[in-house]
Length: 414
Image (tube, rainbow, N blue to C red; front, side, top):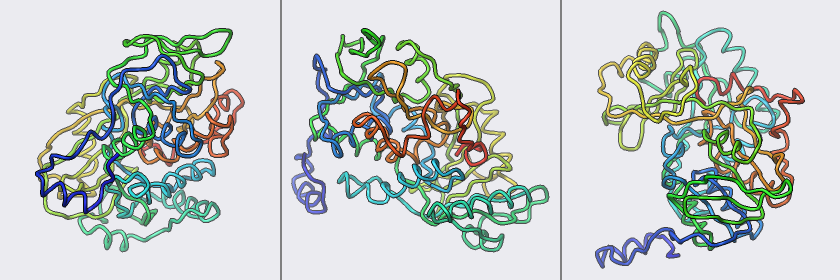
């Protein structure tokens, strides 16, 4: 793999960029692999990468029914933070954030990580109490967050209206290390590194069946033929329940669409990410100048990846009071992603009833921010059979009543 650097860019510029090779290989599948990861999104690619980097397991295939990063990884709003309430959540999200901070150097690929800071607005007295509780919990967890008052919110985000008649801003939960990254670049960087380790990324290859013998996985049937494996990782977000059914077990998740939109590009006006849970929306500005806007999930189960105008109207209408300037913007595009929701709004990283099958799902609306930490924990679980980061996220916690309730921290969509 050619190493990217300023010198490589300069050299290729002098020869009209004719020397760049493909970022990753697109091989035909082999007959058998040690590990098959189903799902070439951020979580699946990160799992494969840390299997190779941390445990030397490189006879790996990452199978994707569409194109690499074409699912939720390419359809999210790129928010990164770790200020969750419960200890297991804070641990895995802060692990992800710490990996994000050095991921460009680790992958030799610019993921455009931007620690611009993130504010979760408190617009009711209940939210004030709740966020101050989170600050105290984060202090005990070693996660850096702080409470800021309304005037400090206004100083960080001048375009905000803190004196709204219905929902005035009373303060906010602020994480200075939070921010955004380029979603496509995260997937591409992991894919390039996996390919360089000798792993096979197989696109346009749908899994049609999971083959088992005596309660153990032996391989998968795909549109490109049967492929054998010793271990199988299911990392397919909203379609996890469909794939689990092929393997003979059920999961406590439901799939719904989450919609977002971006405005026309405008001059820089906002260099912080703002989430407004009371009005059910969030806002940031991309490097291209677009205002990235999103809200809550659809209220019914579905598998659509299209946006809807009534949902865009509902989200924007809720945000206009807090950000009056967006009422004058034109929408450039909108889209939807399929998210998998658990009852406690926390993920599942777990062994399954089928020996050799592992599942990573249930990230709901907060999956992008967790990609490095999720891949790290899933790789450890698959390689060693146990991961401290994943221990509390076992799928059997719902049967035992050991919920990790993040409905407040993740309820708005993040």
